[in-house]
Length: 207
Picture 1 (cartoon, helix red, strand yellow):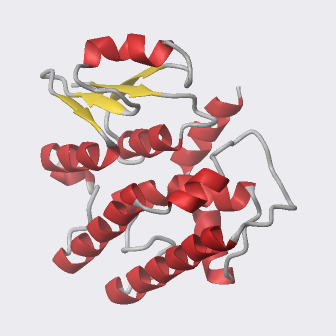
Picture 2: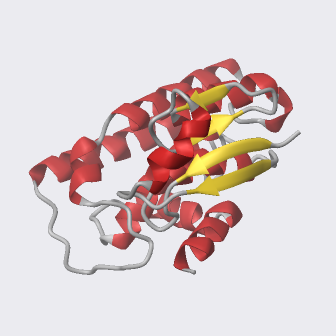
């Protein structure tokens, strides 16, 4: 039982990274279909995944097409409760869903000013005020999640969950652009960059 997943360029597509992690980090079988961003490749590929218009888009073995990472996460969690995409404990699960939803919909200044690029590294980025506000909000959410779930792991809600997969691209941005965050936030960024699935994705992006 293998899923199909449409993704964009591994080095640049933060949304695709998030979607792919929902499979690889939780041991779910997937066949990827890659298209270069900003070309005709993606619209052409998505003709077989109607009505999707963006990457990532998933197709279940039965043929259901599911675009958008938040919907993909929920569908996979429903089909594979044993995989642990969401925490088992009710409060931690609710917290993880809050985190994923805000990451999915927010942080537009940070996304725009610091696009994901796994092939470069900067030391002299001077983010404007709106980006600094997004970083502050990230730290607020991360600290709140750890405190409210009493997480004693490197992750936000205990074991690695879909919420952590959602924050992987922003962790990559913080590292790539050397953005100013606290020591505690840096530990979380380092955990993200050290995760085996992220390292696999990054290696494939570099080649």
